[in-house]
Image 1 (cartoon, rainbow, N blue to C red):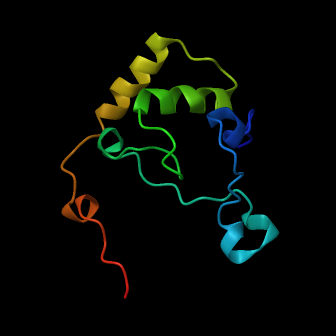
Image 2: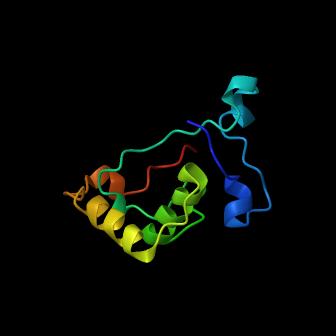
Length: 103
């Protein structure tokens, strides 16, 4: 899947995050990120790999531009967010508690 806009430029980030490449230094890993499930997406903000966006609605609007090259209307964003909220269930406890950091 290609992208129509640069993520860092779209959100106003000064740093271009190279993703997994920053760890592996393998060219094929540039801009590769682990993508979580959409389950409970309405309860798991902030959004994106860097936590740059607080609002699910704003996240949907940004991805409409980056992935579809579309400026979604407020109604379209609302419909998508309504659907995403239907994916909400009980949040597992391990998602609610930060993991212990190694000493």
